[in-house]
Length: 523
Image (cartoon, rainbow, N blue to C red; front, top):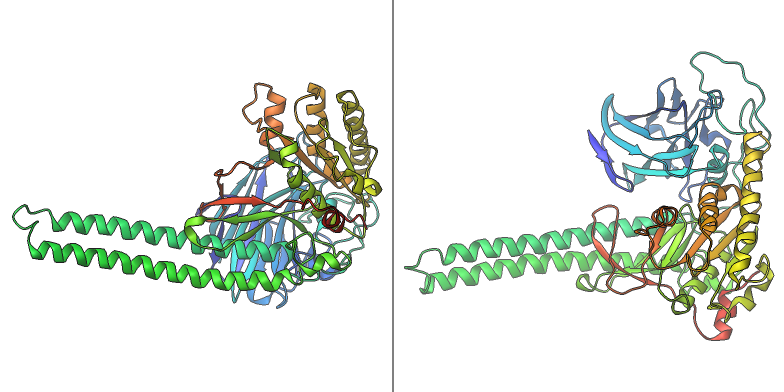
């Protein structure tokens, strides 16, 4: 049985797969059948205790069974979910460690161990998804501190009403959160301009990663074989300087060059195909995922399930550049590694422009902590969405952060009482110059927002030097919980499929005022 890592995927060969999960906490399991934008098509696509089946997907006492040939033809994937059982006592710290298992034809194929770190009470454990005519399995492990209701809302399911009292029925899976009885479920919102969105760009990234790994592997094999054959050619002192030895060395070098040439031509073929896919997608992707040159920036904003942060490349692997994108609202805070906030102001401006473009149908509110006034060049353009003036005095930090914490705690109370409604706003906290000028209690407040911020639709961006090894335990844990974006050249990122190294060029907001106004449009 394969032990999966987060992001890893494997092919599926069985016709019937079964998902199950175990944890110290009592769990419910459920499934979502989603389109290419990772949204449900209709109410029939959510499989849970009160709707235990849809085409090809069935809920049973011991998990979820998927008959792959019977899943609706236009489905992109089946998301396999666990959540806290509302009938069981609440567990401090959320679900705790969860082990998800997928079996094929009644034989365990893969196991994925997930250790939530922020009090999550719902998880997307695994994704069974189509790739061409075949099916594959991906380890996801995406958690939701806001519970099942927030997870469902993020995938196009509207959740109305609070959970009434339920009778305990043997063999029946109850559902956590404010969903029970005859829960009203419907596909929410219009689809993206391109059904793929974030998923489409990650599919391109995966293909690029596998092509890159094949090239690197072929080069390494060619070098090892050349070394071996050259060693054989000179192993006999009596013949090492003869024409036969020279001919053997020449033939070995030729075989090496042919191997490398074939690998590089295959990689270039792949790269050209992927560049064509990216160019076509860029014409229709929503602005938050598109390049700065895309026509999307001149159209009314379309909603997006992710934002583009920059481009990944490798100088030794040709001209292919892959958009690096993450989901929104940010499921992990972004930490921009920088000694100087002012030096990365164009990076922050680009990031804000894309965050503002993700949810045009929702109000966006931005809180900015900017002790060095590094962002003064563009914050005036953000006036319509600012939740108060940018903070430039350290004495004002705690009160602003506490107001966000209070809002998140109120949302948590509403959730636990069954009166929770999904956030109608997209909130952004930009905490620059961290941790200098911040109180130790401010780091604790940001930590609380990482745990509960999803309940108020909060995305968090931190700017400062990497503090993962800080002597301050709270600051170190805060840093370790974030997704770090390096700003120093030569710092590699590694893809989750093959471990290949990539360099990241982060997007920059242009300096020209008219272009800044174009991209930092607030409606």
